[in-house]
Amino acid sequence: MRIAGILLAAGHSRRFSHGNKLLYPLQDGLPTALIAARNLVAALPHSLAVVRPETPELAERLSAAGLELLACQPEQQEMADSLSAAIRHLVFSQTPPDAIVVALADMPFILPHTITTIAERLSANASIVAPIYQGMRGHPVGFNKRFYPALATLTGDEGARSVLRRHVEEMELLECDDPGILQDIDTWEQLQRYLPDE
Image (tube, rainbow, N blue to C red):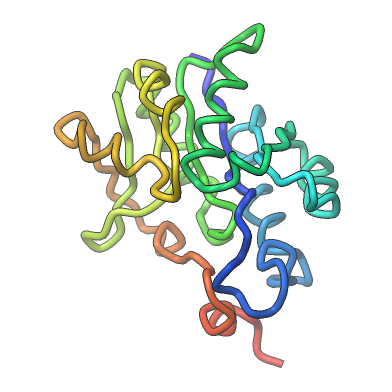
């Protein structure tokens, strides 16, 4: 089964008060988004990053990490819009994937093993796969191609949550020992928790 990764990296960092959070150096001076990208590519070598055209530095770093790039238009820069743009791009490619795993560029601590395990469950014909840690559901989330039509018409800032709500009975919850599935960086204060001690 051919499974592709999608990295959503087109956000505006509206709640982050110090520039583009995705370019902010985190571990070993690497940008947040680059760490997330490397983790995704380590598990799914065929991965696509959705970026804004006005973030060329971010696009360059993600491309160098091995991701295909999709520049979304201004009207496609909310989370759901950028996801639907990625789905349409993949579906109309020469070899559309059988399933996808959707990851967020502001979640740099997800272990590649977690992503690999989600992909394995999709390969075993799971419809939707979401990881849980200590009873809490997190990211990334995997979808069988049957959900492409619904994902391709999403709009707004809610991401795929509406699809998950409509198909909750088809969701397979994957227990994992990976707190990174819950650790996102939205604000400057959140980022401070993850910076190494001087």
